[in-house]
Image 1 (cartoon, rainbow, N blue to C red):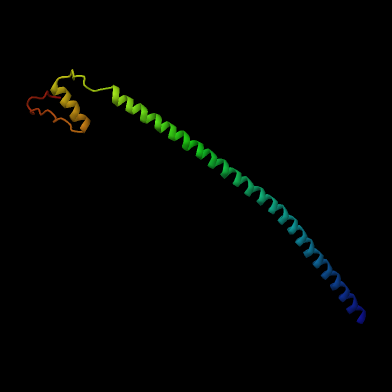
Image 2 (cartoon, one colour):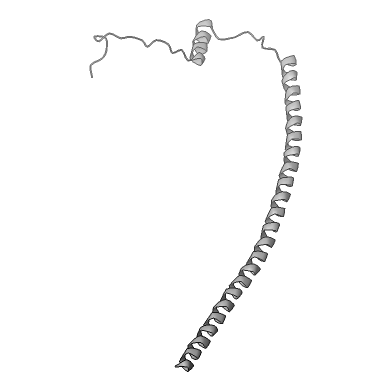
Length: 122
C-alpha cells in the first residue's frame, strides 16, 4: 500500500512540475508579446508626434497664405471702391424699378382680383 502512495505522490509531483512549466512558458510568451507591444507603441507615438509637427508646420504655412490672400482682397476692394462709382442713371422706369426693389425685399405685389362673372366657364 505504501508503494501505491509513493506512485501517486510521484505522479502528483510530475503533474505539478508540468503545470508549473506550463505557467512559466505562458509568462515567457506574454513577456515577449509585451516587448513587441512596447516597440509598436513607441513607434506609434513617434509617428503621431511627427504627424502633429507636420500638421503644425502646415497650419503656419496656411495662416501665412490666408493673411497674404486677405491683404490682396483688401487691396482689390479698396481699388474697386476707388475707381468704380455707381453713378450711372437707371434706365428702367420708376414703376418697374420700384417693383424689382420690392421683389428683392420680399414684398409681393397684390394679386389681381377678378369677379366671378368675369371668368370664363370651364
